[in-house]
Image (tube, rainbow, N blue to C red):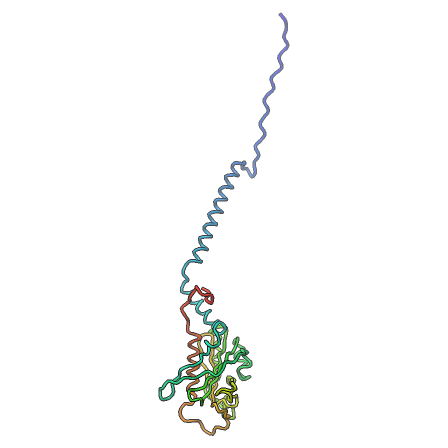
Amino acid sequence: MAFLPPSPQAPFPPEPPPRVTVLGLRGRQWMVVAIVVGCCYLLASVAALGSVYRSYTRAPTDAELEIASRAEVAQRWRAWPAERIFPDRIPYRVDEGATEYATRTGIVPDRGCADAVDAKLVETLERHGCRAVLRATYVGALNGIVTTVGVVVFPDAFKADRAFKELPGGKQPDGSGGVAPALKTAAFPGTASGRFDDAARQARGSDRGGPYVLLTTSGHTDGRPAAAIERERPGRPFVMAPQLANALEESLSTPALPDCSKREWQC
């Protein structure tokens, strides 16, 4: 019997390579994590877009409407045409109760605070943030009385009220029979107000509404100096002035119903 050598032992199969993991997670698990995170981002984006859409399409709240209304009032002095701020004719009542009309003779183009009032008033106005003074002049129905009206613009109603309370009131003679400090006159040559200068100022007044203070200064259209008047005329010759100021104040400061579809409104 022949001797057979032992057959070589069959080799063992190679071991599979170890699975790669990152932070303890394998590839398929990371795929699941990525899908979950992507879905979360998608849901968050949809929710954010929905919130933005609702904020732009919802109706404004009462508080937002009030803020928009105040902002619109505060911008009227430069958003409105000068002819709208100072209408061509303004009604007023005389002592007998009859209605007459004051006629505008001109509008001053400048807006400087320091150029529109006497020096003693400049410090008061500028301390409270005076932005501009718009002036126009009106004459009465009989062309005998003339009044210059000034719209003093402040940043807000609070500052306007503080300034208004510091302004001198009533008639305080300046030593010549006139009044000072006061709003400076605005005469327009070729009109009934052409002779009205600061020396002819005989009365002054003030009113306030919203961020605006209304100043008036009045006299006679013949330009007679206040010092030349020996005694005051009977009745109230300058009754037109406070009514003009009140009419302009109401027009400028009365809130309007906000219209968010127009550019001048910021709702």
